[in-house]
Amino acid sequence: MSEDEMLKGKIDDSIIEKYNDIREAKPKRRGEFLGAERDKFYVALSEEEVYELSPLAYYVWSLCDGDHTVREIALDISNNADVPYHEVIEPLLIVLEQMGKVGLIGY
View 1: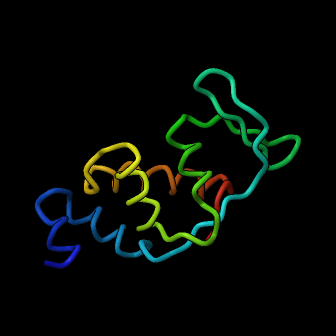
View 2: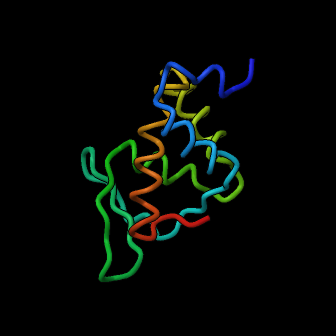
């Protein structure tokens, strides 16, 4: 059974399509980790641009090393959080899209 067949019926077809478009891409994080305070993580692109990341967003950002594909990142999150793979995909796509828009990751 292909990966697409496994995902069909578990997540929306439009999400599968978006995922297929980038799953082999290797996102690379940008910026510098400044530190954490409770459940908030701070990453700076410059002195003027500092972003507060949620624990999930920071974890995703830290995995974006330019060597691992989006698919590998999804599998890592699934395994480490003990969450089914198909449940990881949509939140991962949202985080990657938001971080891409502000420049915290590139491809």
